[in-house]
Length: 190
Image (cartoon, rainbow, N blue to C red; front, top):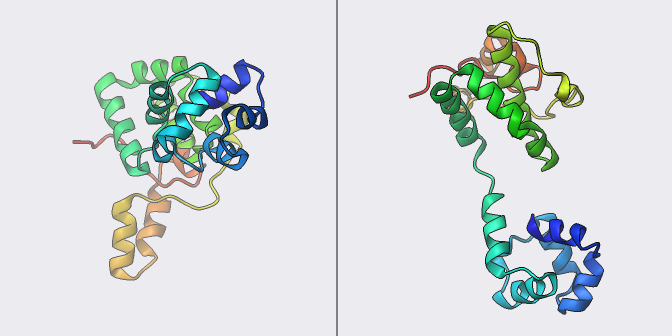
């Protein structure tokens, strides 16, 4: 978030920003942690923060907009479409060059980071490429709660049975299941 970046760049504490802007310290903490979305703050609050940091309210809102987190199912679909549109090799190169996995991981968007890493590892394996060791620290992680495709979860609920979930686990691509993400199809996108 831009406010955090500016605080760091200017070597300013949240407390000092609060004192100089007149915005309560708890509000500053909530904004910086993401608990309070900038677009939900009053114009006066954003204006006072922006003024102290030497940026504009528009800069703050634009930064927040770029950090908007889409639904995980949408993220998965977008990722699969990028692979289809770009091709395996270009997708791998682009993802690694942009360091998207690390960016997502550092935002604490663990499902997205692990899904993207699983996709890169999977594509590397099927294209007989060496695995990029840059993310070995992340490879040791695993989501606490398993993630199943939406259709599988729905089927399990409708049937009132765990069998669709167990089937998804049995047929999952290993690179995904390693992270507790159960994905069996990444190519069949429309």
